[in-house]
Length: 516
Image (cartoon, one colour):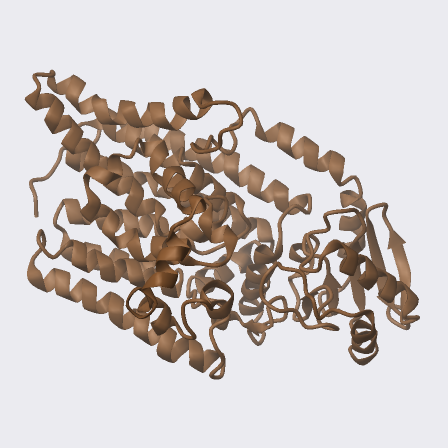
């Protein structure tokens, strides 16, 4: 263990606390407003239903996804979230929990930066930089996912690496593994990164533990939960690389040409700039600290699913903590170079965080008009009321729909458009329209096999009690616009449903004979 540091000064603790509260307040409000105003989407519906089922002791099969809850992702963090949900039975509780936990990652960033810089001021600056990363802000605003719950754990583990507290590091890594099954790959690669700097037994244990957890998850547990079926995202994301997770991971050896073609595209260069640019590329000065993110980044870059190649979604969640930690560590090299050049200690210590602050806040504003290479901040305290006001103006039907949904019992089965589904997911049977009448495939591409005749047969065979459909354009359905309109007309002409409410943007259909 390295020599102990003195306690942080009160002003540093106060600034760190203020920064976390500001982040949690702004992004928590924006995330919950997106839910309240029907902007949230399918992923929130799936995870909301999973938590509701666990909290109520129901069978954990997700009708929102047509998979067992733990077959979608092996996210054991669902259990503590279900305990929270019992106290506060609202999806807003889950969104606030996600935002607060992500904000808490600033604490281990502060601890890591204090350890490496031995100064409070730059450590606060690095914590603010972590909270200011556009990728992190997108992560907590894009529905509900479980990578944010691993962020403080991974960052705390890296702070333990800097102070050589190996047992504490292991505990934090074990907690990170509760978020999702793919958290095991960064753990394994962290073992490789520790090979030259940590005791050999620590590196070996970390590497072996991560590999063992990966193999057990993908080869044993998930196939068992899914009754031997292929893991849902294998074909959609990586069908061009192989037919199993093992083949995908070995694809650089088995299909090197396909891998190189997948990597060599502008979207991936933009992704790297979006992840590393806001911290001025300082992470590249300490590549060993970036190594744990390599597997996640590689899988995102070779994926055939376009959202994996941008920072706007949750796919970069396991890249963020290692990118920030690598930038902090890389900043110490810049400090050392400045010191050797004759700079005063205070100037050298502030050089790296100042450069990173400029790259995060100033350079995106100065880039040429129309350029999107360097991402700007997603939102600020002054911007989010304007955003919420725009949502309110676009969805004037929302208060009326709230009243309608409150009258539908949780025992009723419901099929709904994508943006309406999160609000009705707290039940055993909540389906993404046109499910369950027409079973959906994974993904958001048009369903070429869709036909009104098949949908009509499904409507007759499956007596779902309520159907909630948006009628405006860009309905955010997995069907294309023309097919969605056909589906809506099929429901209306089926003779099986009455139009219970037309709210000028949303129509609510009730199965004949229900609620009378």
